[in-house]
Amino acid sequence: MTTELVDYWQNYIDGKWVDGSDGGRIKVFNPADNSVLAEVAQGTAKDVDAAVAAARRVVASRALVDMRPMDRGRMVIDMGRKLRERKEQLAQLLTLDAGKRISEAMGELEGAAKYFEFYGGMADKIEGRYIPLGDGYVDYVVPVPYGVTAHIIPWNFPNNMIARSLAPALAAGNAAVIKAPELDPLTCYVFADLAREVGFPDGTVNIITGYGPEAGAALASHPDVDQIVFTGSVATGVSIMKSAAENVVPCVMELGGKSPGIVFPDADMENMVANMQAGIFMNSGQVCDAQSRLLAHADVYDEVVERMVAATEALKIGPGIEDSDITPLISPEQLNRVENYAQIGIQEGARAVTGGKRIDGMDGNYMQPTILADVTADMRVNQEEIFGPVLTVSKFETAEEALAIANGTEYGLAATVFTNDLDKAIWMTERLEAGQVHVNEWGVGGNETPFGGFKKSGIGREKGAEALASYYQSKNVGFKRLSRQG
Ligand code: NAI
Ligand code: MG
Image (cartoon, rainbow, N blue to C red; front, side, top):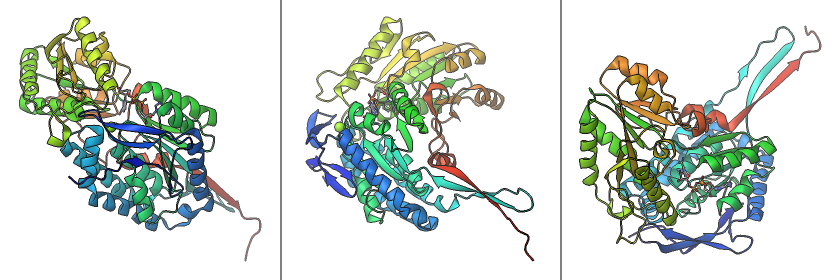
């Protein structure tokens, strides 16, 4: 097998590979058997300082803003092309590191490559404007990159999440410090190669591996960081925003969800099952917009449960490298958390119609794909993000009741409505509190469409043309003519 696996990766700071300042190392495991795959440097606050300083030097040199945006954009596009050339080997490594199925790893890398193409193509379309102020005045607005951007990356889609923020940051003319996820950092280093190969100056892209409370917190609270992008848990997001508040730094936050799929009696049931399966079992449910709640109309409730159980019990469980449907969770801790939630649901009165426990007798972090039926609105399993292959099913009688359950959590990331009744679909899409509302397909959209959360699911938007605006601020420039000419 060809992967890009090496035994030990260092931090990448100012164009050089360097050990952690304390010489510490973090072991990186394969979730399919918990064997050690490699080690990475344990980045420290001192390493973060060095990385931020390197990025600051690039910003101060004006190298990125003085470049013609069309040329900068071409470099960003080239990063995407080069990433695609390495897609197969990287997908193998991502599968070993993150546990995910190989076809999804390929999809993740393809999606990552597309972000560079999409935002690279926008670099020369970030325009200012002229504001008329009457005789004797010239006034215009200039888009100005923030400067040093910090990217704190989660483990569920490490490459995709880096590309999603790095591509627009570079397109807009920023330098970047990336904090790679400690659980699966091994593919993240490719972005160092890409930035160097296309000719970005040393220090434009820096990558630190380290623990969240150490390297992550040091980056989030660094006084010389100008903008922060984070995807992960609400608790960590809140702590990062508190640090950012001290420094008055803007944040883009993507904080997960409890996204419902809502099934009306007239829905195409085969399509619904296929989409609910993908929505909850992709990446074994470790997906921010996982469709973790199924709300079924009373008339079809029993049929919906039956169909979902049948489809779920047909899933193949095994390592990602075999392209299994259900792959191991990222860590033993995540498995404990997910199994614990399934048990909480059962104690709260939910009925485990399939699954409910970890899979004994397999070395890796395998959770049974689980469906908890008869879940009610107040149960914790209906309220809290589980982040594993656990689907809850709840019954509703009216569209109003479905809405109340759907909107009745602190999250608001995504929602899907399954119906062929156009009026009902429109009525629901108007009222669902979510940044992404889909009809008849989970996750309609792509690199081109804005993505983000209502309520505690986040602040700001990633993806699409909209997201680019998070990476620059405006400078208004005004002139007064002092004398009459001619
Ligand atoms: P987390 O939010 O703590 O970790 C995400 C990233 O933040 C990692 O790179 C981590 O090193 C970093 N981090 C952790 N603490 C930090 C701090 N104090 N300051 C700065 N950076 C910090 O999530 P974790 O613990 O890995 O997973 C726990 C739960 O979070 C999951 O079960 C899931 O519910 C949720 N989560 C949601 C994600 C999403 O896509 N929305 C992604 C990852 C986790
Ligand atoms: Mg790993």
